[in-house]
Image (cartoon, rainbow, N blue to C red; front, side):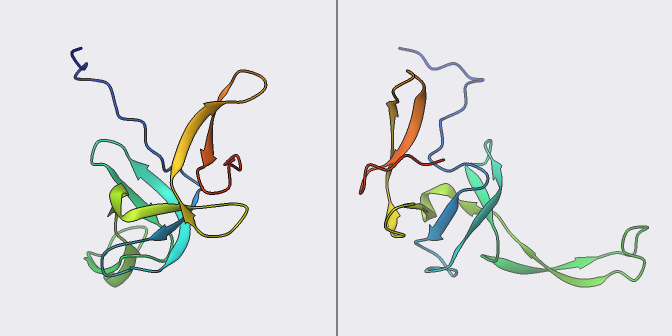
Length: 113
């Protein structure tokens, strides 16, 4: 079966999910996913992977200078937090009672909202 060039992979991580960083410099940190970059397979996590950025003066930032921002992390370095146990878990998909496809935590079986 040939894959369509424009089709995007289904990610286990969505905006608003509580995740734990399982690899890299920010390993062990927990935070909320602020943004998911589908094309680059990356996600921005609140408080993780902080980098310093030099910015020129602009209307929004008249002084310019050095600011700290969250840089994107690869989604393979993130694990979704199980809503029931609070531990990192893998994510699966199944149909709920209404027949809608939902994500669930593989450790506890709890549905991820």
